[in-house]
Image (cartoon, rainbow, N blue to C red; front, side):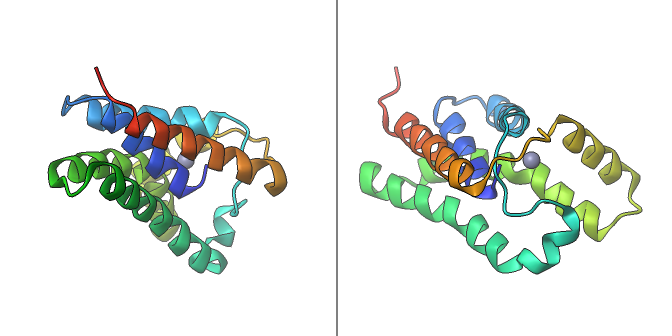
Length: 152
Ligand SMILES: [Zn+2]
């Protein structure tokens, strides 16, 4: 999945827990679960990363900006909530950050192992943009609804 979807779903998961352990574990688990679903990405191979820097930058900023806007509009200025959700969102994009780090440091064995695990778990079926992009927007909207819904 793209970075913004990982970030937004990570914040949604964080909104459902106040456990410092779960706010770390659940976004990571969710990252890999989402990557198991057939999806669309604007980068098909790590070799394309260098040519996609503008798209990656926009994607990386879109999630935090969207969530910040939603939180400010719905809940007002609540620093504790913003930080908590951003922890979940940030942790949720870490596996992709480590993949990028692997491209920059290909000889690092730990990064190589994490990358291999990520690749193994990642669904090989790529959806076309016409289907895959709206699917990720739908996932983002569901995640935002989950954030807004009152918690028990
Ligand atoms: Zn991933």
